[in-house]
Amino acid sequence: MNAVIYARYSSHGQTEQSIEGQLRDNYAWAKQQGVTIVGEYIDRALSGTKDQRPDFQRMIEDAAKKQFEMVIVWKLDRFARNRYDSAIYKAKLKKYGVKVVSVKENITDSPEGIILEGLLESMAEYYSANLSQNVRRGLRESIAKGNFCGGTIPYGYRVENKKLVIDDKTAPMIRYMFEEYAKGTSKKDIIDELNRRGCMGRFGKPLSYNSMTHVLPNTVYIGEYKYAGNVVPGLAEPMIDRDLFAVVQERLKRNARSPAAEKAKVSYLLQGKAFCGYCGTPMVGESGRSHTGAIYNYYACHAKKKRRGCHKKNERKDFIEWYVVEQTLQYILTPRRIERVARAVVEEYKKEFSDTRITDLEKAVAQIDRELDKLVDALIDAPKAAHKRIYDRMEVLEAQKADIETDLAKLRIAQAIQLTESEVRAWLKQFTVGDPMDENFRRRIIDVFINAIYLYDDRVLIFYNIKGGKQVSYIDIINSSDLPTESEGSDLKADAVPKPPVRVASLFIRGSKGGE
Image (cartoon, rainbow, N blue to C red; front, side, top):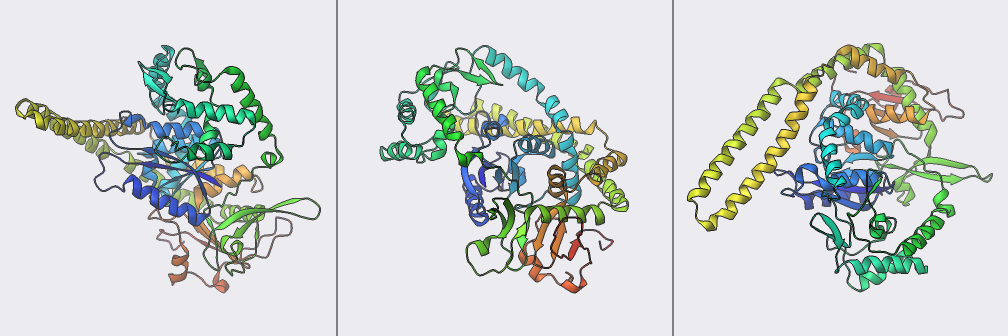
């Protein structure tokens, strides 16, 4: 599985993990999970376009290219400042088959919060259209005038008078990529040669194979900068001859039609949630071909694949995903539990978007305005040597104020919508009607309700989303004194899918007073 890392540092967070710390933890997690990192998107405080988060928007756009299937963040609040942003952008990424994974917290703050976020995803297009209408209008007007509106500058260009003009320092590297690839040189050989010459990527790092993946199909290099699928005339100087560009595109198409590219994409819905019950290692997706040529998909213990001595048998992908969903429908999504969850979700909604939170944010904005006024007054009497420090502090405060005002606007919109228990019940009931054999239906159940499952050869432990925002770990399993033994687990037999292994499932919901 390919993944990208998104890291963000907020200017008004006093105890937040640094960008470097986030990257270190994210890379360590990816290595442990066997995930390949193919890119980084980083937004730092004090960026001139901080409020728009340019790298975040670039990541959302790049997801459409389907070069990665996962976005790794240190914590979920790095991905979005509030639940509305999270719901809107997760829904966009889901359209491209991309999921968001947190290294430090597998789920959001509470079980009610997870259900609430799932509900908001259903309403995401409505919120997205309303909240971004003014921004899109402004961008369209500016783009229509042929002006570059910020974001990532294509490599080989620089911005001059709001236009993309050729950067003489980096453009030769782009031309070399196109010319050599058109001659038939492999991407690896091109990148190796450029690195040998000392060429560096955007962040001062050596070039990678992924660098060319973004460059070669980009029409900006023939002067056709695209916005919302339309070419904006006059915004970018052409760097590459159109005939050369056409040759490169033809070769890219031929390579895309190679047999390896035609392999079906398989979604392992329990990836990151399924673990070996014997050693605690993640169960990872793999496929095999029978003597008849049929392809079978499995979950396999990662330790066993690496020949580390685990004896766990492989699990048939379709069966185990069906089984988890079938047990959820039969024992969890019952009318009594739906009633209780609906009440809890409405309470969470009221708490999340209460008058108190709006008042707190309004006070925070007023406090920042007072500080800014004091700094303006201080400039009058301050010596010239102190002016830079005062300006720097004002810039920090302005960034904080922009963040808070964005959250405040969205809270006010949210508060105008009254979420009722009957609406939540209706939304939850849609999960009770569906075919567990349908992959899209299984995905929805697993994404919203499943915390973790531990697979043994003769039984399954299924954990549902719990309080505390933490995934149930193997250490929790070992140290827990209140988990039932194999003989004490509920006898939940599966008999609807052809040739299922015999299973006993133990189902757990944490955080409820009724002992369920």
